[in-house]
Length: 118
Image 1 (tube, rainbow, N blue to C red):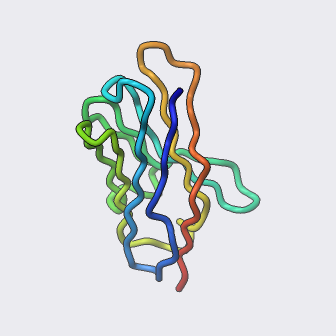
Image 2: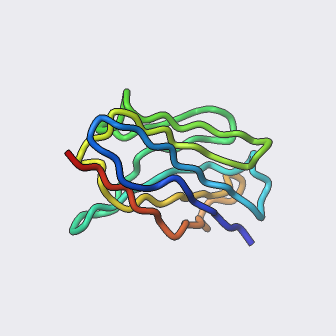
């Protein structure tokens, strides 16, 4: 069974940095595309960044140039480095993964809180 373990959330002042980690287990990691989504109170969940089993990446326009997603296949871990954080980055962040060979049965993490204050 695919499971995700998220860590790295917390509270930071505007302009600061955080690094989120997502450890993926129960699958052949290289075949999994992994993404981070976030949801602010009263808002819909939105894609922040995603990365393929290789190194192709995609980012929401609002985080381009500030966030970097990467993966370590030896550790089955995806990282989201968040720099120059802004108050609008506040929300619950969810790791998500799906198998590129099958698609259609994504797994979601429980979510971790990120709070950015001025």
